[in-house]
Figure 1 (tube, rainbow, N blue to C red):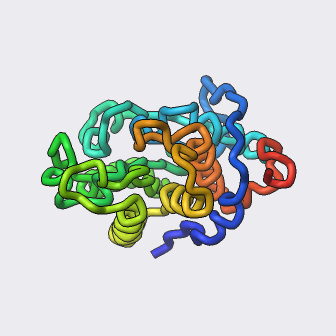
Figure 2: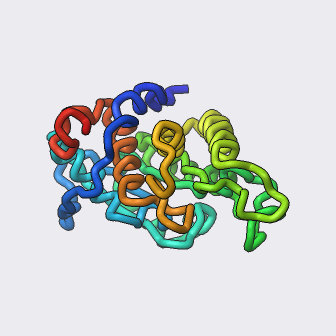
Length: 253
């Protein structure tokens, strides 16, 4: 295999102990077509990517680092990867151009509990993330064999499954399952990994403050969480540290 996702340690060393500022400037994501030298990146996902202009944050980090990128989005709140796997609109987006990277965002319950989510997690519906990744990867490579598929490892619920009667998985338990399944699926499909969830886990272990990275629903990212995710995407794509980027506070504080 030629999978080239960066070591988790590399990402976490460069990101984890930043104070994660609560602001970042927005920017225009190149509404016209890409230039020939632009790195072309498509994001596919749901509300995990939609919140706080996360994709704009990534674009700003790239721009400040002198990277020429052109970004496409197929981000629909409330939709799982299985929706995108069979959506004609998503397929048209994939086939729209020869992407360098296509980043696919998973959901925490579908990755942590791929076989049992419909038995333990309301509203008790099973969503097949594994099958969706298989189908999406085949569509991606059918369009352009040079595209690098990237799977975003999701973060766990802030309170794990403790909010469900009869369940006792903590956030750390849930994140470990997400971690293990993500690595196994990456091996199965030759995917790169953007280990956003593991970055969340490491930051929360170091800074265990309620809603530090999550909002009050214990599920979606707080603005600092979105910023952390954008940093992980940057390191994953460019294989470079974010240290010294103009959008980071001086000295990482």
